[in-house]
Length: 115
Length: 114
Image (cartoon, rainbow over the protein chains, first blue to last red):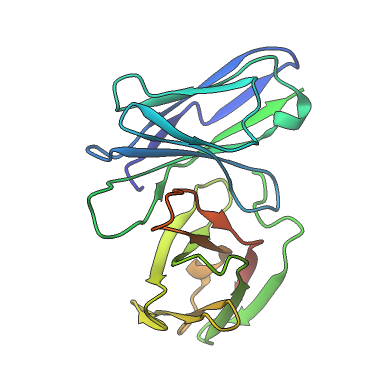
């Protein structure tokens, strides 16, 4: 257990529905990252925050995706009008920028299945 | 549960043997490299990292080697144990380049036979 928690762990939804995932990073970690992982592949970067500011977004993050970190602590990732291609594991990671290490610590992920 | 290792290259070793997992990275500007271990249904777990100003780093039972000339990274696991069975990913980033993203390799599934 790295200390990064994600909820829910599993989500099954029907195509066209909206879903929201939550990530709670390690306490005092000011940087928070979202990745997506499909079966048999490595995680792919989606976006990251420093405190409450969203500083980088991948082109994978279509306009149906939105991420927030309103108070610089937990973050939410919302997918609107889900499509079957959104089925994947959504991973959150965090790190403390002031530390010399750049290691990102990952949570257990939220497995999304879109029917 | 779902299989992280579906369709991945596989390395099978006997318990007690040494394992070597290789990774080729693509970005010559990458200056920070990490190995992660991922078990089925779990998030990636940090194993060891190395910066580009080093060519070798050792941890407990693990060693990472970096060859910048050919953009190659390897993970050596000594005395492999059944608990080491998992999918292993290398990841790279330009830590000084302003981008925070980790770029992951394809992954290797390690199976340790008792």
